[in-house]
Length: 238
Image 1: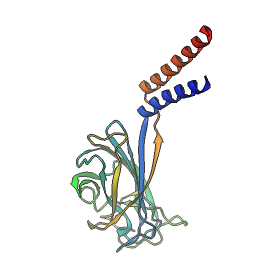
Image 2: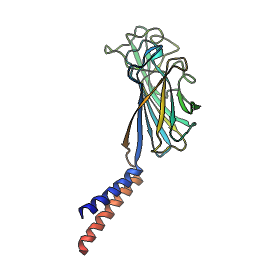
Image 3: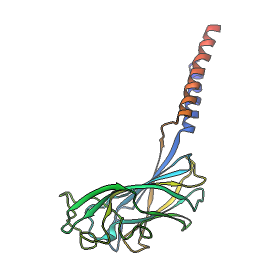
Image 4: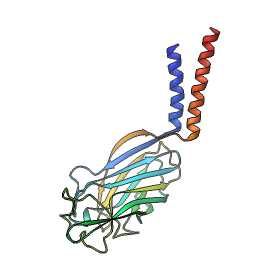
């Protein structure tokens, strides 16, 4: 009897989980990555779901950079469904202006000004350089002392390059054919104001639950009520 009840509950919860599920994968730059601009450290977290969207959180982790060549400017990626076109539905990031001497001023949270390029290396490309660049690159955090003490002239007080995006930018993409089972096959980070300064990312994968939408909750609740009624009836008739 207990085994029957457990099996039935697992079926119901499994059905609900199948409706409310998303895949996430985080790509990072390998430890010790460098470019001609210096050390780089970045991550990109992708979340795919059954609504045909991809949410990307792109983060610069390199603290107290010296050169604009250490800042994130592009992200290339490929998907398991072979999609090479999509639409950038929205983006968001907080602006930051690095002043001469390394102090900084935080600005508003705004659309990043980045764009989405189709058919790039068999996939898609989130791009600052062809849109808002050379401004709008993503900069890592300041030093522990609270300033960009290492920043040289390509960052500190540089009018064309300021403002930057502070630390993290988020992007919501509409891509046809994407489901919760769509995987990100590769991700390549680009740095600096010259195209083609790339570092291949390496993946760290996990599966996380998504809060069910109302129909999913209704399905789960109905299933549990049905099970309760069925087992009560079985006892009464026994």
